Length: 422
Image 1 (cartoon, rainbow, N blue to C red):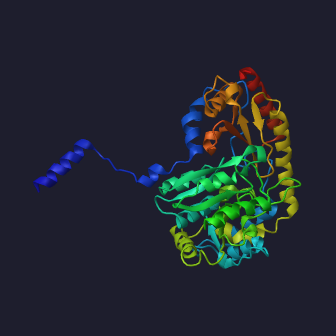
Image 2: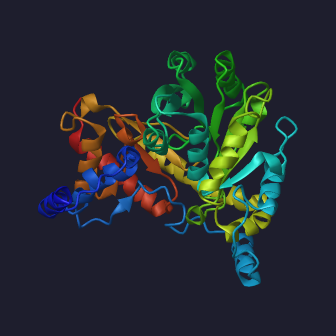
Image 3: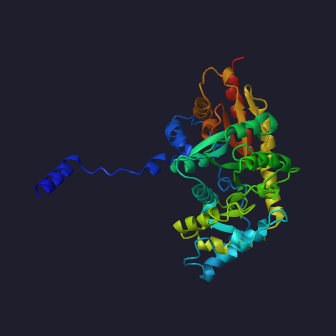
């Protein structure tokens, strides 16, 4: 009794102190951290005489240049009005949605049935399921540099190390195959590949994908293929899925509706299980289905509408990519005039990476400092390469209006001329 009184008294003196989990401490998205830590205070100091242009925002819905197709909007409206999809569905997804996704992505080289599809809460949720199914604490995954920041966030939360393999800007961001193989050790559990790419906009040929798969096959490593930008390529380019190029390597393809259908807020994604040699059958595939039970399936309303999404005509997607490609060309031409910058022309997705020759900008120690000062003096906001594990660069998003692209490029060119030293 005396001990209990002392404990209560100590609590009153010390106050509440409830510790958080290690996972919550380690779950850090570099984009959000950099925005909060470095750029939120800077926004208050920016040049108010100039309109703020956010080349940082990878949301295709914000600028009104890439509208949602009427078929997609009408499909969701109809599902709401029918009131048949308000309840719980299967954890792995509605059969109608899984069948529609399987039919949309099945090919002769990589056939699919609904049993090979798991619906998820966005492509991010699909990535999380894959990483959770393949790794334990202390394992590692290989990911591209430059690469999407969420890979690190999801891996770190599970105490999984992310090892980076180099992409080569001089070769349109192709994978440095020797460096990829150097990163592999006995704790490596999978290779993450992204094509078309965020943040680079690269689109890999079938031959290059086969080269990557040869490395994976030599080490018996599955591939997680991030294909949320499936089919989003510029004129003259061809999209190749990793699974269609694979003969022996098992591939978990993740995708979703966010960018192809311009509805990132609807949070609908999927995993396509392309098993080879039954390598995933015994443990990984059942594990994915069990893990899907954690959220009891994604939004039933959007799932029920999914079969209609794939009826959107190809002309809609082509029109959207024409907008992005024209912006990319304009941005590339504009930034080619800037001293000390080397833009790499993308081939798809919605982004462009720009390398900064920091040796010629002694005022700035890093691309974080470069982009901070660009925001302060020119009111142009770009994310620095540190976010994508590629210091000395910045990313440009290509979904705003042509007028904003042109204005932003002029300001960046002016900024470089003001700070460049031969």
